[in-house]
Amino acid sequence: MIDPTSYLAELRRYARTLTGSQHLGDALVSLTLEDAEYLSPERDPLDKLKLFRLLSRIWTGPVGDHWRSAERERKRHPEPLQRQLDRLTPRSRQAYLLVAMERFAPAAAAQILEMSEPELHDALTMAQTQIAAQGAAKVLIIEDEPLIAVDLESIVADLGHTVVGICRTRASAVAKARTAKPGLILSDIKLADDSSGVDAVNEIVQHRDVPAIFVTAFPERLLTGLRREPVFLITKPFRADMVRAVIGQALFWSQDNVEVPSNA
Image (cartoon, rainbow, N blue to C red):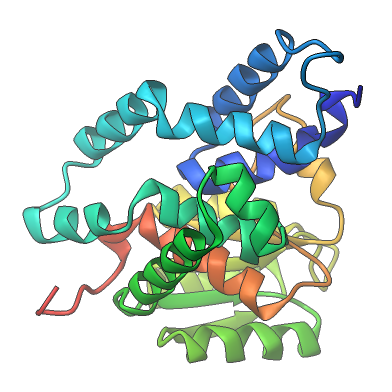
């Protein structure tokens, strides 16, 4: 039997991105591990796929329904925005994140979601269509490595968003955020002058409620569940489809920062 705690960091990353919340994501993982304790090695040996399946069952069941309802009530979205949220179903979001972010093969993702491969294909198509239809956001990139910054800028532009600045230090990022008022931040952890991207984002969000995606080579350091940690993480070296998936999910949970098309 595989120790389920060996997958804690991966489960937390996925659950936080799926729910848009560290608190809810970590709670979802805790419930998953509680359910896992009832599975005996003889009856149902645990592996990574089965742990993700347990998490999926909780998220798509009554507990997940309650959490999503509470989140909608908390945000109090205007009716057009609420319709946009409701069109992207929990199963399609899960399918997209499992394949694009967690790198499960389609056949494995279908097993996790307990659907056929044609159904998974339809779910992926639905998620990709809805993410492509998201409104345009102003994006601030905080990154001191020029090649990585260029890659991120290209991916952001391909999604139809506008990069309002690329900053290499905490001070410049905070200053740019005050004038540009971004709707999304992509930030490295360690910056050019040895300042912290986390500190830069924390200072920015004191004045503006904006989602942030952190880009790091050491995601496990930010997935301990022991303190306040980022919700959205991209691991270096990253792939374009992973960045697209996480950007789409971050903006999904932060619709107030997106300019929704008039025909939405």
